[in-house]
Amino acid sequence: MTKVFVGLSGGVDSSVTAALLVEQGYEVVGVYMKNWAEDLPGMQCPWADDVADAKRVAVGLGIDFRVFDFQQEYKQRVVDAMVAEYRAGRTPNPDVMCNQEIKFNLFLETALDQGADMVATGHYAKTSGGKLFVPADKDKDQTYFLYRIKSSALEKTLFPLGDMTKQQVRQYAKDKNLWTASKKESMGICFVGQVGIKEFLGQYLDLIPGDVVDQDTGQIIGRHDSALIYTIGQRHGLHIGGGLPYYVVGKDVEKNIVYVSQNLNNTAMWQDEFSLTDLHWIGDAPSPSDSLMVRIRHRGDLLEMVSAQFGLADARIKLSGAERAITTGQSAVVYRGDETLGGGIIKTD
Image (tube, one colour):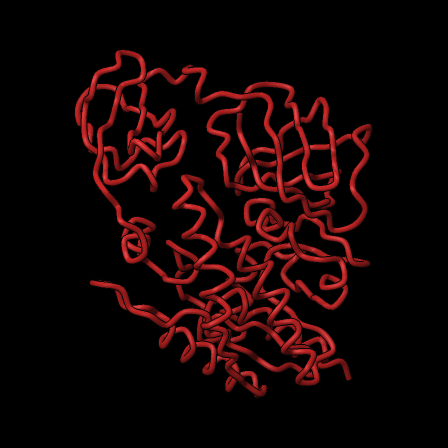
């Protein structure tokens, strides 16, 4: 019997994942990954509630339950890397780093060492033959966060929710009387629950207020919390009241200035060409002659690529039209049809 270690987060998706595998005849072991357990000022980390919910699901399904303590590795590989990127003025994606370093690296290795044949998670994605594909529920597609997984890891991974919609998952959980059937989805930073990025980064970086400058007039029109925490295209959290909304169109981290504009057509916000660094391909690198699409943000549209130059570690991509708020530090993921090929980290000009 194939032994599968399932990442049980305490949410409904991972709970249904475990239940489906039990139903399909696998020997299932539920594992809670204890990645973060620190409270922040005014914010209690939800890990204790999550692990309790995960254990209740495991008991209800009659499966073994374990806790893998990855706090030290998570701090080093994900949190420290994220903080360093923000310090440099870039906007990273911690979910991508978590999947690359923890769930499909450390978790997989630890599970295999403890006797697992495969691992499974509640991600909405499909895998076959070491390749990654988009799921049936396009609204819940999580391949954007999974593009840095190695093909060898995908060969030992199951995504049981790949052919289900979120509505079907909820209904299945209710039908099976799973403890987490009506539990709401967690929001905010992937590992801290409801806390916002400003509150979290404030524990590690000196967030110094500075000037907000209207790029079109050159006038100082407000004060910001710190240039480090703002993203191109952002319009909330600027503390500028009245009239049309302002959008972040640039920032100078050294001078701690955030530049804004009310003009949605501001050229600083629109680009049709950008570079990628730190490339990762799940299989072979795609051919520039292939019919390729690229996604530059989670749940963003698939954008047509009219040309691409792929090097060993870097790439240059030209889109069929200008796109708003292409952000340095975020990921761009390349697709060929329903197959997720890989991608890299955006570097704008």
